[in-house]
Length: 268
Ligand SMILES: NC(=O)c1ccc[n+]([C@@H]2O[C@H](COP(=O)([O-])OP(=O)(O)OC[C@H]3O[C@@H](n4cnc5c(N)ncnc54)[C@H](O)[C@@H]3O)[C@@H](O)[C@H]2O)c1
Image 1 (spheres, protein in one colour):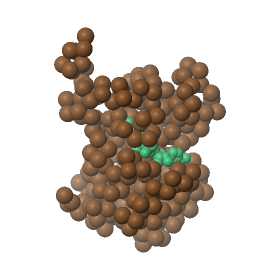
Image 2 (tube, rainbow, N blue to C red):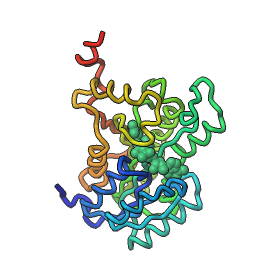
Image 3 (tube, helix red, strand yellow):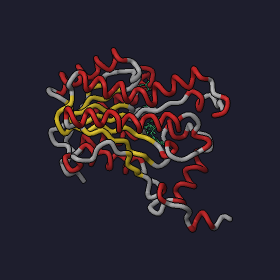
Image 4 (cartoon, rainbow, N blue to C red):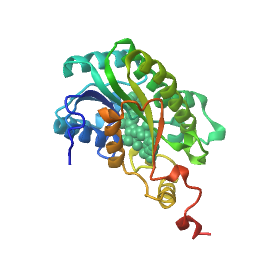
């Protein structure tokens, strides 16, 4: 089912690691909806090589970039504009990583150099991407930039660890940068707050399975899948959401506004 929502649009998609990745599903759907784009990921993530398969399927080129490295980002944006033959209409930031989570450090016992690394990768990288696009005047008017986030930015989820703080920072960047990008270039900037999703990054959170099932039982519509997240993202890249900007948009089957559900109550 394709609607040509992105016909003729050009973009960059960060963060497709494997077929479970939200960015992977978004790339596939963007392709079906008529977009052309460049795929990018951190050089280390590409060693697995799965991104080549996605590039082939979607007729895309791959340009490696560490999203924390400004030289890499500058090179990426320059090359993408050159390869795609014009300025960009959409960019997806689908990047997250916490060293404290990976190494099992508790939130009350942070290793701060790991905290800084995770913040740089998961939050500040969004500012770096936006600043590079802005400086290089790489976005077309009415372009759209989306980053992925989680509700731990608003409410406490103990096992989400320092990623909660990173997501709060990320969402703030969407508002702060969104103001200037809107005023000066008519570019919109939003974050999508997605349900727990079984991906490499998601499953890294301690107790993910219980957490996933709990959210599913709490949400009147059930958890949103990676594919559904891709579908929502495409609407934000389309021309039908031109005046939506500086928002954190919950895509969670209703979880964020549910106090308790009958299914959850039955367990008590
Ligand atoms: N999975 C979930 O439960 C869930 C829920 C809400 C939000 N999110 C967010 O969705 C986004 C995508 O994650 P995902 O769930 O698809 O998992 P994923 O593991 O497939 O994707 C994370 C990506 O970040 C990339 N990355 C890490 N360090 C990088 C760097 N320095 N430079 C460039 N890229 C780098 C990884 O290579 C990987 O491709 C993340 O922001 C994540 O926090 C995920």
